[in-house]
Amino acid sequence: MAGFKYRWFEVTLEKYGRLKLPAALLKELNEEDRQTFWATVGFGKHIMLWTQSAYQAQSDFLDTLDRNLLEVKRYRNILLRQSAYLESDSQNRIVLPKSLLEKYNIGREVVLVLDHGQIEIWNVNDFNAACDEVSPEDYAAMNAEMHSGKYNIVRKEGNDVS
Image 1 (cartoon, rainbow, N blue to C red):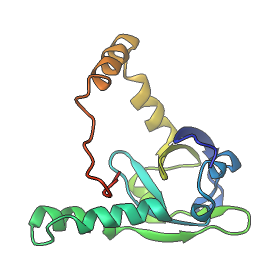
Image 2: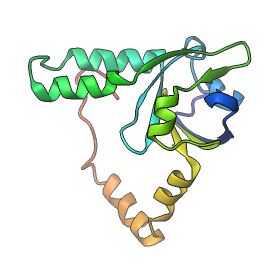
Image 3: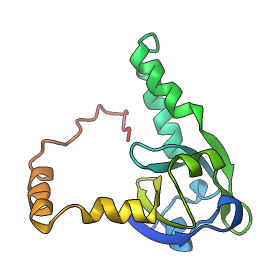
Image 4: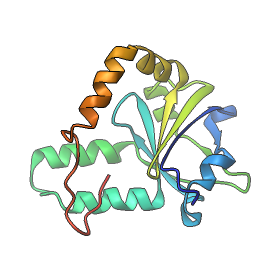
């Protein structure tokens, strides 16, 4: 792994929702995470593509939740409802589920955002609009708030979930 946990890439989807994963993105992943992925609903206006190890961490996180609570069941079911196991071919291409492409209005031009083994797949216009709606002054304020510690996650030892 090259060491970058966060990166973004602009790419073009091929026919039938086939995505060629950029070589630079694959270099950022552990070798065992370069072949198999899980596509699920995103936590925003994007598809979430998980590496196998990131998806396992999410599964482990689900195991920490009380499965008898309706909120937990709802969260789990939404995540699993449109999830798809994907294997890349010899040219590092995967086919994204049509249902997810339609749900998030994903066309040919997309942005991939790498975040610790989770890859957000955005419609390029939605991604740019989300970034452009923040003024430089608002971004400065956002930066100060992020560095305030307000959003830090306290993790229990052995339970590093994303």
